[in-house]
Amino acid sequence: MAAERQVTGRVGSRAVELFPSWTLFLAVCSVGIGGTFQYGYNVSIINAPTQHIHKFLNETWASRYHVELDPNLLTFLWSVIASIFTLGGLCGALIGGSMAIQLGRKGALLMNNVIAILAAILMGISFPTGLFELLIVGRFLIGINSGVGFCVQPLYLGEVAPKHLRGGMAMGSSIFLTGGILTGQIIGLREILGAEAYWPLLLSSSCVPAVAQLLFLPWFPESPRYLLIDRGDELSCAKALKRLHGSSQYQREMEDIQRECFALDGEKPKKPWQLFTDRAVRWQLVTVVVMTMGQQLSGINAGLLIDRVGRRYLILGGYLLMTLWSVVLTFSLTYQELHSWVPYVSMMSVFAFILSFGLGPGGITNTLMAEIFVQSSRPAACMIGGAVSWISFFTIGMLFPFIVRGLKQYCFVVFLLECSSVAAFIFLVIPETKNKSFLEIEKEFHKLNFGRSKEKETELNERSQLHDEY
Image (cartoon, rainbow, N blue to C red; front, side, top):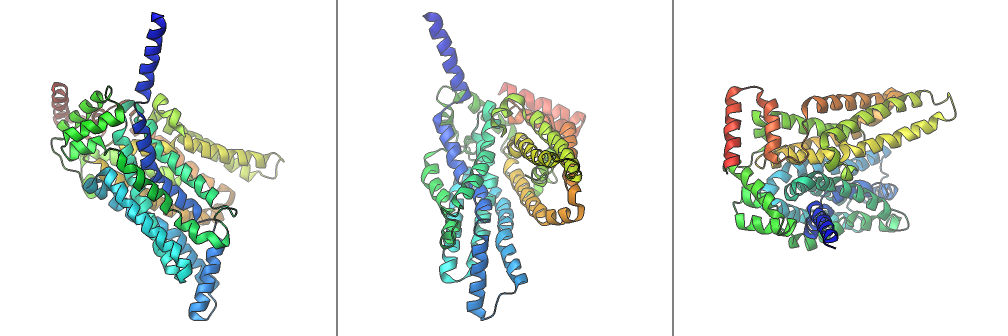
């Protein structure tokens, strides 16, 4: 009986270690529904009403100017409606870090929902008012909302997660993004809101996740790291950690945050342009740019594996597999007529390519972005990473049709070269960050940023000794 209780106790303690509290899980859900879920949802829903919006543009133009809308101008207006979301996302990424610093991670996400609700109203009334310009403005604003959420959500998730769960929780960004895309496709079905009479409701339905986050997120605490390091509020930090990690488990995280706060010694949050001149974050910044571009340009979840296998092996393996399937896909497209089964190889290669993306770059890129910077540099780094992501998203959307037209069946050679180059960069530069504190990860990158500089090594040793003493 005693042995049974002992085993039960070990199992119970293991469960607590792996999953500290329901508050933490629900906080992740509250943050995600108004973060990357919105991004995925609004990328997805614009496809269903394409023909209905074309008809609206034609009718509006004819009633306003008494002439038919030129087909080339129609294509241009539709392109603006579809792509201005990306421009809004870029603007949102550029202001998201500043909002996270001034308002806090939680405050920035709450304020961001006001933008989403305003965008939903403008898109909803565009049809009854006959003003397609409101549709353009609304898409721009919902792009800003998505850009801010895409920037701030990884910050919050990376800062509230226990060290051993940081990778899995950061995958929440990708999970909610995928959920948003799937939900948008379902809501956009003709039987739901995809019919001609309902397309304004479909576009304005983006207010639902925003309202949901406004209702639920206020019940959860602010990022403990933000409270202590940026605000100097140790009491609120301890309260937040107790709620998120449990009363018996929060002490280790509290000590880790205190060590980072002591190491930063009152250093203020940096601006994005300051990172470009700071040698101490040179290779971290290069990593963010390369990884973010690789994530977007590669063409497209490892939640159960990321904290077991490690970030470096998963993302390196993902890019290597994507390189392999790009080779297979190129050969199968080239020799389509050789055998009847070759087209099935092409189809299998596409699915394998997407799966490889999900196992590596799809989720781990955001995890690394939240891990490889300390508190003072993290918001600015997320702004830069977000801006690079949106620019890359826009670039590949614009260039891919021309790549296909010019290279035909060899179009995947471009992605083959890109994936193999990023894989080489990961192998040569990125250290493993699994189960390491932010300060330990910073030490790994200092070896790259400063080489064997004796002066810097001495400084790091002294600082490490101070950490231990503290």
